[in-house]
Length: 265
Image (cartoon, rainbow, N blue to C red; front, side, top):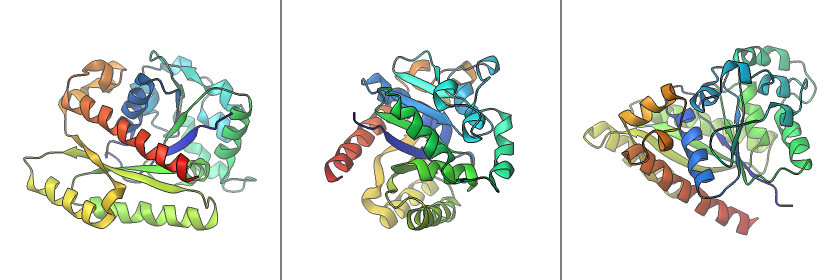
């Protein structure tokens, strides 16, 4: 059986479009027939809320999975989108950081849970992990469990400084924990073509990381911002808006890069 590709959506900086990217990329992948699961590792639980999952449906969460109190299969919930499921998060996940410090296999709790889950045979092609906005033990667990990382990067002044931090963390994980981890790509988010700063950030990032930056740029878009309050991805809220179209293009690029990665493996 082909194992799913596990992709961490990570950036220690908040407000960069990380959860928005996780939700809409997953939806776009599911729309073209991929079987996708999101693992919500952010204590704020925004990915769970953004997919319409009520608090009552989060009795078993990724906290329970990380702490070894439940299997990943027990936490997984179907969404209203065919082919897309989610393991939700809740506020109790905020306590996992301290609890993991002295725990056995503290860096590999999520990796172990995913391995057990996939041994049971669910037909998934992608697992996307929505990481918290910090370089925490939860983020390390996500990177330890992943094949590759997607970094959403907001087109603003401090973007490059934040980028260097997450890239250093990825290198450390590659050296010490997960030698197979790769940077799949950097996706530029909240881009405003009328703003010279947005264009300058894009130019600088492309000059630095070259082909690691996706061709697709996610524009600043009101409809994308509105969608989570309705409990649906932007692709369901307004498929024709500029943001939704951009996420569809991004999904095509991700699939294209994943095909190359599989051929090279």
